[in-house]
Image 1 (cartoon, one colour):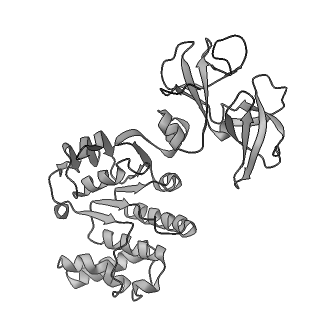
Image 2 (cartoon, rainbow, N blue to C red):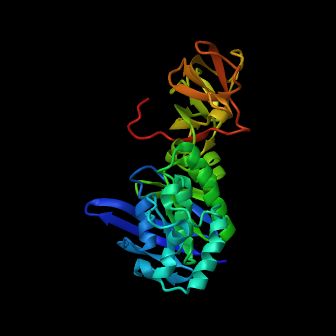
Length: 362
């Protein structure tokens, strides 16, 4: 089945600044794809190009087999939800949802039917006559979603839709928005810089960095199988240690000259490395455990900090060889100031091996 949305070789610059470069991406029909990345990575510019508010310098945008690269926004039939809801405070909930339909001269009976269908989907049944200022921020965002969906768009675009909400309300609202989008079955692109939000709402996540697409995949793939050092460091918690490749495919940590000292650590290589190559290990807290100091392949150190986080307790370990590791363990595993040993748990989350960044002399 062909993709519903296809972006091919998109470029965009503003003056001397390159914002997007050679970006290609496919989105399946009914899929929720999240565009994730740090500020300045190009994700909002990409969304605006898809919407038609910005024109790419090169490349094409195809929706349902139709090229729309040069079409104005009003001819694309896309729905948009912004971080600023842009609701009309003097109108009721149902009047806000109906506004776009009325401007299109849709018959009143059809407007009433459409509003009556949408409000239950966004958990706002019974709120028809409420004024916008009488409902919460999360409810206002769901009104904005219903208004975007009212004209029956073929694609839904959401630009940081939850950034104005407090953390507790944000979590509840994103579940409600995700459920509504799933029930309707519309294809959606959701922009955010919040990793937890991206993992919670996205079928897949497209991670951007400095205008380039680093990796696209499920949340599990990005976390467990990062294809670059940037992905490994941006997604989830991770620690890094410099080392050199040993002749058995493991990484020798703590001795760059193979003089018999140091610890050999297993990992999954991101490319082809020869013995003696300088590399960097990226280690997830869940891929490490605290052990008896007598353990063979262990890195010894001291607990600098201990933070309880509900699903795990995180221990920050200062290593004897230099550097720090973050380890996820049970709450009673150790205490601040204690001497500990850290060993790998590759069956849970194997370390990833990447080339050493240039200029890193550590």
